[in-house]
Structures are given as C-alpha cells and as structure tokens.
Amino acid sequence: MKHFLSVNDVEDIDALVNKALQFKMNPLVSQQIGAGKRIGLVFLNPSMRTRLSTQIAAENLGMKAIVLNVNQDGWMLEFEEGAIMEGSSVEHIKDAAPILGTYFDILGVRTFPGLKDKEADYSEFYLQQFIKYAGIPILSLESATLHPLQSLADIVTIEELFREKRKPKVVLTWAPHVKALPQCVANSFAQWINAWGKADFVISHPAGYELDEQFTKGANIEYNQDTALKDADFIYVKNWSAYQEYGKILSEDKNWMLTRSKLATTKQAKVMHCLPVRRNVELSDEVLDSACSIVTQQAGNRVWAAQTVLAELLKAK
Ligand SMILES: NCCC[C@H](NC(=O)CCC(=O)O)C(=O)O
Ligand SMILES: NC(=O)OP(=O)(O)O
Image (cartoon, rainbow, N blue to C red):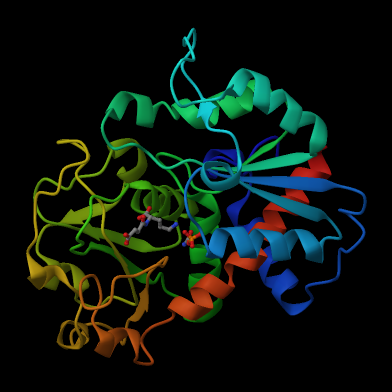
C-alpha cells in the first residue's frame, strides 16, 4: 500500500478487517515494525478520535507520532500555484511539504472541504498537493471527499457484531444538522460497503441529498426513511450537505432525526455514528443512551483500523 486515501488503495478488505480484529485481541504483537519510524499528523481541521487513535496505533507499532495543528501552531499555508503571498498565508505547500517529507516516514493529513467549490473539493486539491510535494506515503485523516480510516473501523465494527450467515441489512440514513457538513463520511462508507459487497445496503435521505454516484453506485436509494429502516440490522446516522446544489442545506425536517420509535420495525438494529454527534438534532438521547447504540465501540475500533493501515504502509516502505 503506497498511500491510504480511499478503498481503492486496498487490495483485500477482508484481510484488513481480520488484521484489525487480531490487533484488537493483541495490540502489541507487532511492536517492532515501527521501531525507529516516525509519522507526522498534520491537521488543518479539528479532531479528537482520528488524532488520538492514530497516535495510539503508532505507539502500538513502536512508532513515534508528532502532531502539527496547522491553524493553531503552524504557519498559515498557501496552496495556490503562482500566488503572490502578500496576504495572511506565510508558507507555500511547495516549500513546507518537502520538509515534512524529510522529517517523517509517513504523513497523515486532515483537510476538510470548503463546500464552496465542488470541483476543487472533489479533485482533492489540498490532499493532492501533500501527495505531490511530500514524497512520502500519505495517510488520509479525512479529506475533502472521503474518510477511509473511519470506514474501515465501521466495517470492522459490523463484522465483529454480526454473527449470522446471511448478509446484514445496513442503512445509511441522513439526519438533520445545524451546519452544512461534508459528504466525506457518507461517501466513504458507501464506497467501502459497496466494495466489501457483504451487506444489503440502503441509503435514505430527503430528495436533493443524492451523493456522488461514483461512491454510491450499487446501493439502493430509498427516499422514505420508514421503508428504508424496515428489517435493518445496522443504521448509520449521518448528516451531509447537498452534493448537487453543492454545500447547501436543503432540509431542516426534524422528522429525519432517529428516535427509538423508528427502531420498532428493525431487526433490533445497532445504531452507528462516526461522532462527534449533535444530541437531539441528529440522534435522540433515548437512542444514544440505549443498548442499541454502538458508537463507543465503533470509535474504539478506530485504533485497530489505524494500526492495520499503518502496518500496511510500513510494510510497503
Ligand atoms: N470526523 C468526523 C466528522 C467530521 C465532520 N463533522 C463536523 O464537522 C461536525 C461539526 C459540528 O457538529 O459542528 C463531518 O461531518 O465530516
Ligand atoms: N470520527 C472522527 O473522525 O472523529 P474526529 O473528527 O474527532 O477525528
């Protein structure tokens, strides 16, 4: 694995999932493979789970992790080619990234979309420049369009909880939010579940919230949430802003919030969310505080997903 930017960098999803579950049982089994190696974790946006789980994962592999929060304690970066840097940005990515490439063996990068310019966001403008100029393996810590470490942890969680022979019914449902959020988590989950091929996958959202087909192709789209939820084994709750009318909030319909009564027709569905979650906006207290919620287990599995991916990146070096 050269970089880890999407499911397309993965040869065998099942092998990664199994490896993650092995690390969960025995976290320190590969403490030598990262000895003497260093990962830089560059954040252009906030994070709790991704930052900490990747740091713990690195430590479990004997590797050192150093965090740089660009907007708080780094120089403001410029990404525009040919920019005349008279404004607030101090250092060009062309100058900064090669230096990071000499300090680290792997570079993790978090860059959210601006949600203004669809073409720039969907071309992964920022991430691509880190890839181009750092010259070392790049690990996506959530980019403009995808969040692959999250999706791997999500599949690990489904795999460890679902013990029946049939395929689980997995429903990704849109939820209301007060802000316009990226499509990353939803795009990435759809892309991974489709590539995995071991679930009966349904996506439910109000009209206008259709995601980019390059990620959702193969999923059933169901506009009626009640119909979508029927017989569900797993419900993944997530808000995203519109993709077609890019970055817009088109619905504030509170009926889309997942409540306990909506779980009645499911197969005692487990409820997932990547977190952070806005309580009583996206998901009700009664669901989050009940045994249906597996969000803590899901977030815990971020460590094993990150550890598996780091091990793969180290192996390829
Ligand atoms: N890394 C997990 C989710 C990150 C981001 N959520 C957020 O920005 C939430 C912000 C808020 O609730 O104000 C998203 O949806 O892609
Ligand atoms: N789920 C997730 O990526 O959380 P953070 O934004 O806290 O890293």
